[in-house]
Amino acid sequence: MSITAKELAKILNISEASVSIALNGKSGISNKTRKKILETANNLGYDFSKIKTHKKNGKIYFLIFQRNGAVVTDTPFFRKLTNGISDTCKIYNYPLNIQYLLYNEDIKKHLDSIISYDCIGIILLGTEMQKEDFIYFLDINVPIILLDSYYNTSKMDCILINNMDGAYQATEYLINKTHSHPGYLHSSYKINNFEERADGYFKAIRNNGFSINQSIIHSLSPSIEGAYADMNAIIKNNENIAESYFADNDLIAAGALKSFKENGFNIPEDISIIGFDNQIICTYTEPSLTTVNVPTEYMGKMAAKRLISILLEKEFFPVKIEINTSILERNSVI
Image 1 (cartoon, helix red, strand yellow):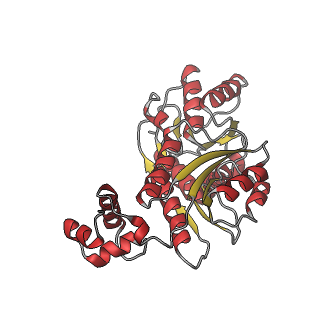
Image 2 (cartoon, rainbow, N blue to C red):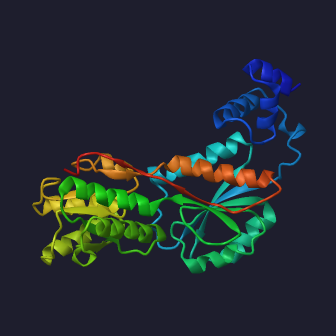
Image 3 (spheres, rainbow, N blue to C red):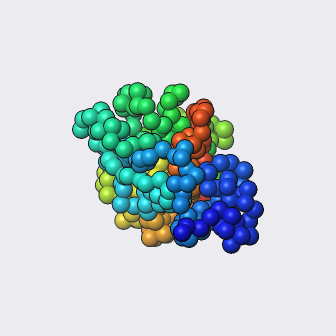
């Protein structure tokens, strides 16, 4: 015989009302209390079928859209994002299916297949998506959470990093530290996040009295190997080099840093560099890389919680949620 809600409340020394709120997926208690109740209920064999009659049967799908390969799934960044989604789905007893959507495949056929089968909601990683890619998702009749990108539509929620503000903070940090005009290591791949980071960089340059026309900007591939090769070519061509750089991501920063060092520059004495994302590579570079920290796992949790709340509620009003970042100081800026 399974444990009852009343027994669960007694074991946890929590009110029966709070237990009922958690078990029914309603608002009114803290996330910490909800997690404690649901995990204990799972461990003690509570029969959720008795109360979750409103819970839709089926799976939540985490779809990773891949256009040019800039989203690298075998990284701590991606694993933390996935863990945030997966852990939240487990707490609320929703099965999760992770699949890839490739730009050159029949996306419509793929989506029709999963929706006709068992999909009740989608978390869509849109890092690499362009405006024209969203046409496939506008007529889908299940709720969608767009993660790490933004598209103005009444169909889906958007949860993303506050890219512009993060880049602004990073650029202003360099200005305050080096008292010079920072350069920019900009991705040669067009990705919405990087375009927003470009806006933040240029805004900080303008607001601190520098001329955008005098900014030293290098276009580099958004990978360590690509950025390293591109920067080697730039140095070989005797192009102007700035005293400091903001990079669109940590991979670009790490590749450029390696090239600078091999070409006789001291980091940070000659050139200061700051990256973006706080990937694990930051701790392995020499010197360690100052970066913009992104709460990746929290983003995943927010996406899953928002989708589940939509599945449980009768009304839906789409929202855009931007998650703030912070500067994580290491040793690549002086």
